[in-house]
Length: 335
Ligand code: 5GP
Ligand code: MN
Image 1 (tube, protein in one colour):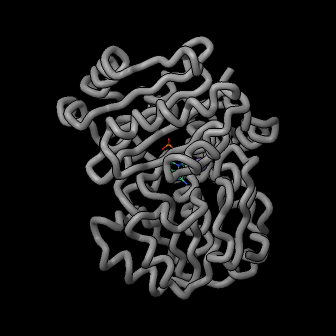
Image 2 (image 1 turned 30 degrees about the horizontal axis):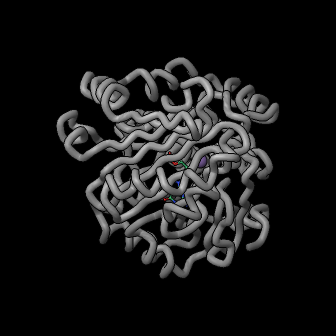
Image 3 (image 1 turned 60 degrees about the vertical axis):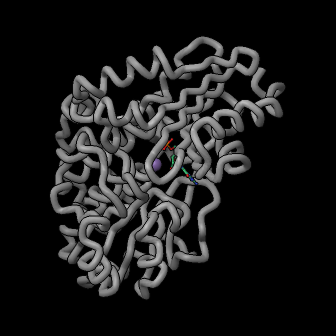
């Protein structure tokens, strides 16, 4: 994988560009994709953002979101656009299988592939150019760096900034995670100077719950939470019947795992959701406990040190039991 700066000369002539990201894109994934979209569009490239799946409707307000293709809705068109592309940008994922059913289409694409990402252990052999930096707060911060270091940095505008602010805000837990460096705040200052409304952005993402989503959280905290004090851990398992009862949609469970770490002394929070296709884990930790390693070793997953995910084809009960068994190995680390 060559350095990402070697992509700039390629952008001097009109190209067919596809931007994609991980399945069920979150604020950082969608923000990075759309931020880059608004940048490259000004350079007169033909740019298409393709998401592997649908996304939470609290991202729909983002400028350009109405033009994003959902691969699962329109496989033929999306596959055709990818097969005809000159350049493919892969944002906010480290390994092609994070794009679910889009993986074989991306793998078969003959165009130049560019990675911009902050996850551990990227599949570098897949990409021609790129940058992977686990110390970056977000892929949106990295897209900012990409634009800022380019010969076209004056093209930064309010639409780009709105998208990039969204992802930096969501991936830093609103500027509180340890990844929030002084540099992040400097980037935010530059974004702010384009005229973005940060209050409005925050409200779009966080103050838009339906009544049923709020009641779902209430029920989860009341009835689905188990605290394992001897391990300073908490686990919450959401059965399918809760998802049905409260009409839970994509994105509605986002943030739920963070409640577990709001309890004093809790260092590991684990949320398990009974999705149709699989059981999906979300892990969060405080301090040195590395949930990326934990998820990789035990639950076919990965991510970052303090935020990772995993999955399993076994039942909800089997997963909870497995969690309670494997956590015994970590009693010392969690003290
Ligand atoms: P979340 O719990 O919010 O779904 O994910 C937390 C972090 O872990 C994100 O950075 C996400 O990209 C990563 N992640 C989530 N699920 C998986 C997974 O199954 N495999 C890998 N490698 N990373 C994951
Ligand atoms: Mn991210």
